[in-house]
Amino acid sequence: MNEADLLARLRSLPLHEAARGLADDAAVLGSAEGALVLTHDMIAEGVHFLSADPPESVAWKLLAVNLSDLAAKGASPIGVLVGQALSGDAAWDAAFTDELGRALAQLDCTLLGGDTVTLPGGAPRMFGLTAIGRAGPAGAPSRAGARSGDALYVTGTIGDAGAGLELLREGRDGPPRLIAAYRRPMPLIADGRALAPLVTAMMDVSDGLLIDAGRMAAASGLAIGIDLDRIPLSHDFVAHAGDDRPARLSAATAGDDYQLLFAAPEDEEWPVPVTRIGRFHDGAGLMLEDRMGHVPLPERLGWEHAGAT
Amino acid sequence: MNEADLLARLRSLPLHEAARGLADDAAVLGSAEGALVLTHDMIAEGVHFLSADPPESVAWKLLAVNLSDLAAKGASPIGVLVGQALSGDAAWDAAFTDELGRALAQLDCTLLGGDTVTLPGGAPRMFGLTAIGRAGPAGAPSRAGARSGDALYVTGTIGDAGAGLELLREGRDGPPRLIAAYRRPMPLIADGRALAPLVTAMMDVSDGLLIDAGRMAAASGLAIGIDLDRIPLSHDFVAHAGDDRPARLSAATAGDDYQLLFAAPEDEEWPVPVTRIGRFHDGAGLMLEDRMGHVPLPERLGWEHAGAT
Image (cartoon, rainbow over all chains, first blue to last red):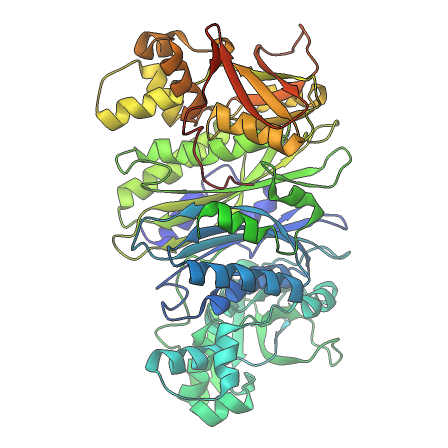
């Protein structure tokens, strides 16, 4: 059984209406102003982070990736419950916890509770975090609400974290901002809150722009066309990887961006900087193009795990 | 760093008021009718369950121990978020998930969301669950509210699960009800709801009656005296282990009971069957007695991990 099989099986369990069929970034409890948004992500050593990653980076990411799911629903964080496994390395564990505290303070969040467990020796480090937030007055946009003719927008730049991970894996030097994008992604809470009332669908880019955009289109029952040339790349990314078709495809499939991806009627006025990169159409599937014309889809659109609520 | 050190460190993090200083079974968000009660527990193979435990038992316990924390706050379950690690044994994982669904249905709960992760080969199985419930009109009793002169009460019988675990560990035959008490504890949701308006403090017995009663007394700033002879034992427990002082001490320190332990003014009328086993006094510490007189405290009062919210 892989994660997609498991997700299918979980969908047959007694689901709360708030679970949105386990097809969204988060559960949304209540529908009026003040609805609660709940999300839970686990991270494991060797899967979601490298064994050599410093504890500060792991703690930051654990919190940031969950708050990013809240941001994608336009929610403001209330607090988190943390499941922390003790690794037997006291200095590592202490540094993790201290950084979690700094991250909570910096991201205007608090600790609500949690659990600790002492793992058997040699077991990989593993953490779980449940984040709870409050949706804005317009409610929490789903990823299933895009309409035919809507444009697809994304915040920030894409591919920086993927390039940072590549540098770390290969032990190479490179622009510090790329490594920081991988190790210390910033959940876009304020951006999500500002955008939520204006969008028809929103999610965060965690597994890769292409796979995530395809999921939004599929959830909305639509096709999506993306202009690869419009995908916003940072100066550092271009300096590191270039901006030809292969570089752009690598950025669009790398994941870990934690930018906000949203569908909305085309507009020139947005409360935060965004880039229009595609358009939704009747039909199904993902089509890519650039200035050279049609772009064949790469074999791998992003991280193919089951996704998380 | 052990779990108690970690808990002390976590208490220095930015805590939400709802976290109750990380000194309760659950966080309580809001104080009027309808307050939300949130709790998160992790369970790991080799720590909280045996490698040979059937997946059905593990799934049931994961849900039941969290709902027991809600029961101790007089809350009714709304739903859960589940972190499930895939073990590589598809039949095991599928049986776990299917049983989780049956348990949710049986315990009148639903799935809100969660996350899945594929563990590296050989890693111990590990699960996390966040349960969310709604408190009753009287709010959620803390474990810190006992008053001097209050009696200490417990529901049900104590020691059955511990005896069941002993039978399983030793591969011996024994009363099926003892094994069921270990493998399929029943969260006392209805009892908790009925008792919550009547108590000054309440918690569930998860780590052992003595250690948990001592925690309630310490949180309340009081001493507690317990009459070992009054601790309610089941017929099966007595048939298996006897009811002399060592047997009673073993029951009172075994843990995994998931009965409700509460402080309240002495009364003869309770909405559910309960047994009075002790009394709170000014002072500090835990005193034990039985018909023979003072009972020296055993070296181990229960499971000494840090506790969980």
